[in-house]
Amino acid sequence: MAGTRESAINRALHYLEHGEFEAELSKRVAHRTESQKPDNVAALTTYLTDEMIPAFESLGFTCKQFDNPIHGFGPILLAERIEDPQLKTVLGYGHGDVTLGQDDEWQHGQGPWELQRDHDRLYGRGTADNKAQHTINMAALRFVIEERGQLGFNARFIIEMGEETGSPGLRELISERSHQFTADVFIASDGPRVNPDTPTLTLGARGGTNFDLVVNLREGAHHSGNWGGLIADPAIILSNAIACIADGKGQIKIKDWLPPETSASVKAALNGVEVTGGPNAPGIEPDWGEPGLTPAEKVYSWNSFAVLAMTSGNPEKPVNAISPTARAQCQLRFFAGTNMQRIIPALREHLDANGFDKVTIDETPEHNGVSFAASRTEPDHPWVEFVKASMQRTNNQPPVILPSMGGSICNDLFTDLLGLPAIWIPHSYTGCSQHAPDEHVLVPLCESALATMTGLYWDIGELEAPAS
Image 1 (cartoon, rainbow, N blue to C red):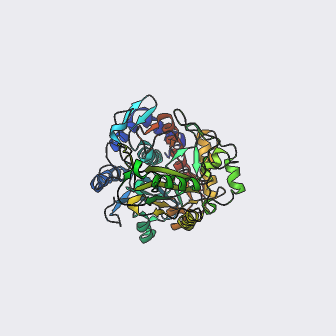
Image 2: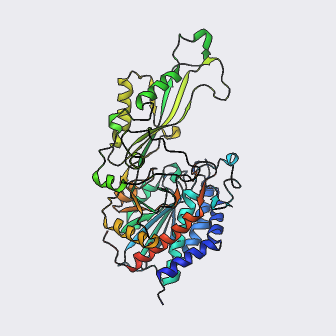
Image 3: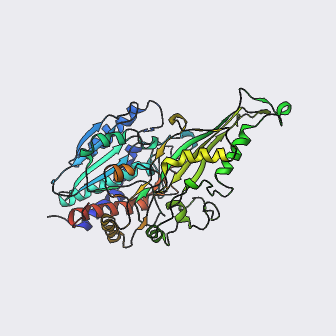
């Protein structure tokens, strides 16, 4: 008997209700897979060998673990299950690495490395980003196989261990071995839903360029009483330089940093979309950012500039002296169509034109110089329509379609390098505290995600999937 879609989804719900999901996620959260921590390759490798490879092999996948082409970074796993070369192939993705645990700063749960449930929240580092998300998708594959005896399509799945450090080596690996990553469509999960209760389908990613602005004037600090008013203060210069990049309400002032005019299709997709982070999320400030745009348009179709950190002197123990240097770690998040190659040159020209020739731009990786390209799949692509219909069938409501996620991820490797339509179905929400203490996922959202992904994988194997 081939089983039914409803029975496969019931398997997924049973998996959650009876604690199996929580137990599986707990083992994965316990791995301290901080890719931003030096010399942590052994822990990154263990996550693949102890968790991912056995899990995929139990589903009938064969696994190939690649050493990272860039020395010093974690390995990359490719798992595949080829049922029939004539069938459609779906490429999946997840990342097992996490940001630094920030162990001493957690206020809820039992710290970053022990999964802890508190009502409808599961706390732990990597729960939202990305261990729960790829655990859900892998489990959904299992329930389809158990119920139908096969997937009804071919599956390839990438697990990388360096997304939080910019996915080093993944581009090089896919470029060198593109024949091993071929597929008809890319479907994966990362990032947040537009709000916790609304199934969401995301078609791309903002790009991101990180850089430092530096003012280095002299050797050593000098007494602020004896030298104040006589020598330049690097912190004041740097603060004014930042103020000429974006005004007091965050509106970007560099013309080449702006995206192209928002297209009619993107405006239509965002029409009526409400942005909310759920309980305990910060309130949206309507007068911040580009004027005349809705909150959804600001985060899903426009560019934003942020100062991530800024130092001059010793903030912990200030003294009465004018510091010799000041540094700000900055970031531009940008939408597809922005000229990525002009970001840094345009910044240099803008600073010089405004009299800030003493401000230098540091793009070196050791000083936060990481970049992602922006990319997206068009909303009218046949695979988008197929996934949308499946999600609506499962959830009895159409998903919100976002042209781009607010964050940055290696989406362009799949759209541009492999030439695939790329579709993201996020299983988290914006108030999840990813990259911060108290990271968590919501149990009701995970329940919805398990049903959604099981239904989608069932439909790909049962219905006539579109051409790539």
